[in-house]
Length: 221
Image (cartoon, rainbow, N blue to C red):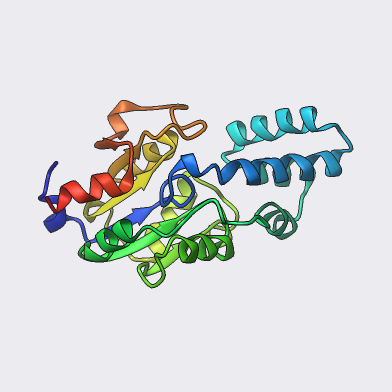
């Protein structure tokens, strides 16, 4: 593992879901179910049809919310509040990850298609409080999600990030392509997360690992 990253990178950017906690925690299926129920109520369809619509919007628009906003004029805050109203008892604190994040030189930022309120709850539950210098969430980007280029442009501008001195860790391979095009170093967490392999561009992946804590540990080995 290239230890020189510790000298070259001054901004460490992390996705949230299935990145700062493992997909084995099965947290996202709870959100998935609430999204399906939201769509079923909105469109008056059964849950099977709602799931098909949900996944199609996710694949076509980057997030289910983006599709609902564009195709149905859904008010984003109502959606975000509803789908993230889940219990977080499936995830637990990770002292090892907390120690590794704390040891990274420079800033640590969360870049998520979720909202900052939910992100803060996850961070607290994971025992990572106080370790991040900021959250770039879906509200901050004007509800423009990854992998749309405008979301990354906002991230770089808002935090004055030099992409050549940043690293972006993400479980969904397609979200690394814009980051690599901007000059970021990329880490793909190939950990079995749903849609993780979709639109994989190998040229956009600099580093690949199954677990964030394991990968960070190798930097300090």
